Length: 285
Figure 1 (cartoon, rainbow, N blue to C red):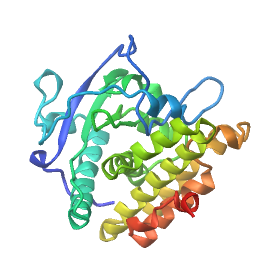
Figure 2 (figure 1 turned 90 degrees about the horizontal axis):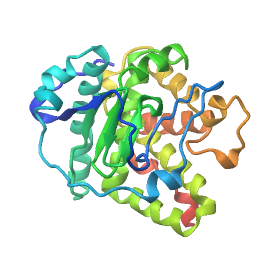
Figure 3 (figure 1 turned 30 degrees about the vertical axis):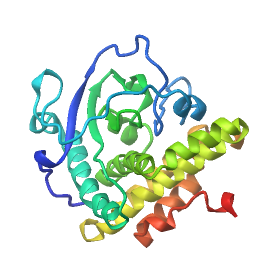
């Protein structure tokens, strides 16, 4: 996908530290990709923990030009090819979603991209790189240890820049859900009916997949041959059933099957219409 180079004045990015990062802290925010290499790959975290006890943090506004250690956006985004791709994707996602919110007369705020290595502390608690990319609604941060993309390629068999853009766009989809109120509504529903917690979380994840597809569909002119296949391969590779090797029961799923993830990513991409991403529709009829 031929994304333009990011404009550092139009994105929020900072460094999130590295090393330990696991001392204390609360549960993780929603949208985490868990890669647990203990005999088998496992995907997902307990949504009741993810959404139920978020820590409150002071919200930030405006572009962030520097990160930990006084690094500028240019330095952070230029750390490696994966970081550059992430910043380019963030810039494109902002440019795509902001007009959609403006047209709907809904307030918009950019998320912040946070690069870290090994471990970090977010507004939703402590996290290690084993969690993979995640979105924290408490501080509006998309957290990425770019070494995850090597795992996506070598261990999950999902190479290619579009596969990596899909991950970024999925986490951005969780930011969209926070801005629209969907995330808060789902959290309340999970608290009221814990038995449906996993089912509701699956619908959240599938909607984020659809939103990722919408972003790509609205930038169809930038898509290159093979991108669609890369996206479908990535979506298939991180389905609950695939990552559990068929051993996990559907009741324990938190992100959806490979077929479901491919279906909703495809729907967003082919329609380019965010209104087609209502994964909760059948619950309201």
